[in-house]
Image (cartoon, rainbow, N blue to C red; front, side):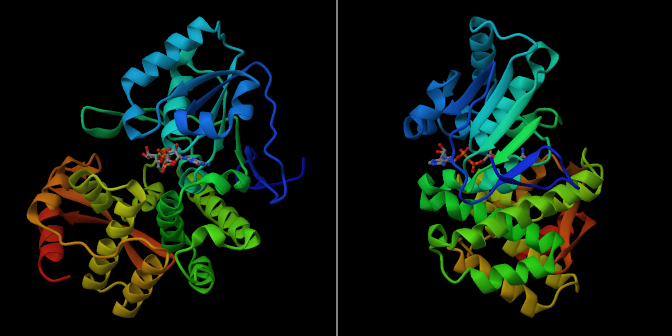
Length: 339
Ligand SMILES: NC(=O)c1ccc[n+]([C@@H]2O[C@H](COP(=O)([O-])OP(=O)(O)OC[C@H]3O[C@@H](n4cnc5c(N)ncnc54)[C@H](O)[C@@H]3O)[C@@H](O)[C@H]2O)c1
């Protein structure tokens, strides 16, 4: 099997070449997937023991974790059994969490199938589940033994999920790589992302993974630098919660707001924020949101909060983010008073 390895950064990530088949075999493994993927890829599942979880963010829960653990016991899984998580970010986070706590941790491989999971959720060793209205409040840092990224799986991905994934791709370019941002500006001509040239898509996947790895390798436990990956997420999470909007769509709106705050703080130029707005729009992601007091209030629930201040991620320039400790009240007034 031919593959590209991002070895200088993370030896465990395999980005397949664009013509690699998806016919994988794993010994002594249990596949964990969601009900959508089990239907679309029955042959992939039936080779090994498998655990199927209903699709959707609601399944990223303690109840599903318990179900997985019960099934693993039932299947006789021991310390040598490996988990193969096959799915989008929901399954990856849930299965990696279960693998991290079952018998004090067993090895696991991630096979992301959504764009968002390929460029973001599979990389960096964070796992977790939601609990009592709090997103990712329970979880661990624990790196996968192997991550296999194969863009062939994207052929079945719904249009909406392509857009959600692109929000995170634009984010990674904005916080870490100006030439990559320019590349996206040049190559994302319209919102028909599914029809992107496979070679361009391969480059985008590789660049996104490479950039995320280089941040994570410097700060695995998110003590400092890794926080820049939360660019757009403070308001993104608040919008997600308030409007029950998809994660990627909400992050796109969060990026628009954080870019405008960056202009307001005298960091990037207005022209830069217009370029960001245009790229997000061309990717078919939302750009317009009416902010109100209630949405802003809900950022207080965000776990990145520290008393009345927040570590807010701003852009110093396109391709470079900074972490800025900001009073929540000041942030509120920036956002509410004519951004
Ligand atoms: N651990 C991390 O670092 C990290 C980073 C970013 C996001 N996340 C998490 O990832 C989750 C979001 O991930 P997501 O957007 O992939 O959501 P998801 O896993 O719910 O997938 C979205 C939908 O696409 C379907 N799908 C996935 N791959 C498919 C394919 N190839 N063909 C057809 N359908 C497919 C799924 O069944 C689901 O219905 C959230 O829970 C978020 O918190 C984690």
